[in-house]
Amino acid sequence: MKYLTASLEDYLEIIYILSQNLDSVGVTDIAKALSISKPSVTRALSMLKYEKFLNQEKYGKIFLTEKGIKTAKTIYDKHRMISEFLTCVLKVDSQTAEIDACRIEHTLSHKTIKSIENFLKTKNILID
Image (cartoon, rainbow, N blue to C red; front, side):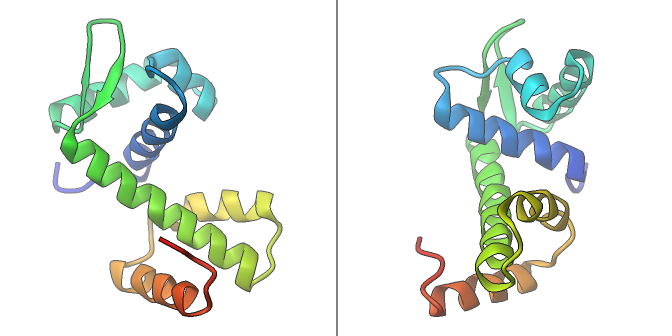
């Protein structure tokens, strides 16, 4: 796999977010958070395990690897920047901004993301 699909990026991002708030992340947690079936989660996790983004105890806890954490954090940071840009600069309501940020984060180039980040930092909207 040369690149992650938008769907697999969403899985990494939600695992990262859930792991910030829960002691352990399981298939049920991911399925609930993404409003999808457990079998769909299981299929995606097997692809992510194969690519060394995560480890999973047999029928148990899911842990991001170092590679998984780095990738998930990058995806999460992109989402956060886009959402901040939409709400603070364009004055989009927060619910719409979250939905749109989730869609946009998968398509914008690294160069555009960097430009948004620099703009937000110069306006003191985004703080590391």
